[in-house]
Every structure is written in C-alpha cells, then in structure tokens.
Amino acid sequence: MDLVDVSLARAKQAGVDGFVEFKLHEMYTADLREANLATAFLDPAALNKLKPQLLKMNPGAKIVTHHYAIPDIEPDQVITVRSKETGDDHRVWLYTVPL
Image (tube, rainbow, N blue to C red; front, side, top):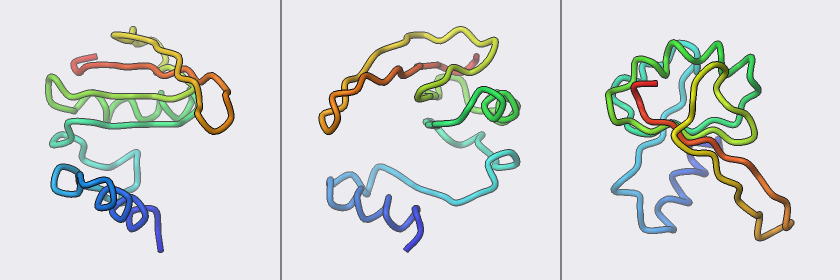
C-alpha cells in the first residue's frame, strides 16, 4: 500500500473522503494550478525549488509548510502546534496565494 492509498483510507475513516483528493506526482513538475491546498514538510532548498509550482496555484489557494518556511516569502501566519503524542512543539507556516 502506497502513501496515497493510506491517505485515502484515513480520509474515508475520518469521513472526509468526498472532500479531498490525493495524487502521486513528481513534485517539481506537478501541475498545481487546480489545487486549493498544498502541504509540505521539506527543507528550504527543496521548498525553494518547488516555489515555481506553488506560484502557479490559483489565487486564494492555501499552502502549509511544517518545520521550514518557504525562502524569501512572507507567511500570513506562523503558529506553534504541540504534538499530542510526544509533547514536542512544531512550527507551521501558513501562506495564501498569490505569494
């Protein structure tokens, strides 16, 4: 079972499978123009390389990054979330397109 299958199963279990879609693509060439939400847990170099794809998203689309910010882009908000499992704090950056 790949990550898309796991994600679909979890979405169904949560009752949101009719509201989400998961696709497996090469991230640097994926067409994100129709996406209204993108999430990423990537280092700054990878986020910088992904930036051209993110910039093509429709106005109003949301981007959420975990642990690292998108280089040279001002986020709408930065929040800290505490893990219920470990108690560790995690920083999350929230963006709205256009960046």
